[in-house]
Image 1 (tube, one colour):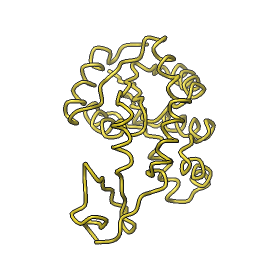
Image 2 (image 1 turned 180 degrees about the vertical axis):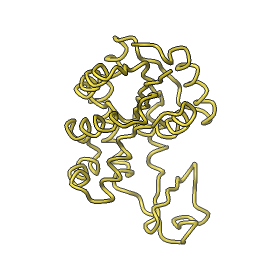
Image 3 (image 1 turned 45 degrees about the horizontal axis):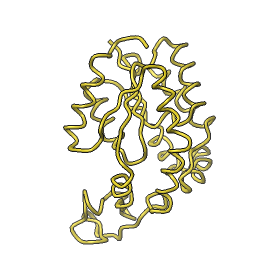
Length: 222
């Protein structure tokens, strides 16, 4: 029985954390376009260099780059039992492209989980992120603070805030989400696929809410 779902929501809503748990529980891959793009940036591939300028400014990577990544990924063998899309689609044109791809491959989307978090909570989550300059370990001023302020627990190197974690960039990312991605809420609502979940609370609480939304629809065509 396949499970083909999308996690939709603003930056900082917890899609990545919940996506990892959901994918492991259902034995399906978590396809996170953000992770693929970050890897390309670290390795300074041609794709990474193209994406860098957009991501640093809090802008979305152009559709043609992202769609090509997802098309290739959905052809992989581990997607035969289903998949979780995290961070895709982000625009209506991407959603149209995805609908065409999944229709051709006989793997229709069964549900779109919308993570709902208010703006103040999102800003608190996102602007508190700090990263070790040496080994890349991530910290959070509120949720996962280092033992010594400004220093990595592992190597004692100085922590810094990435450009895409600074408040000005975060505000721009949220503006872009509202302008370009929020229209997907209506898009999937009209298709009867949207399911809303409160993404505030403990990780376990949110995970259970998601399971209750997905379970009745797993394996169903839509």
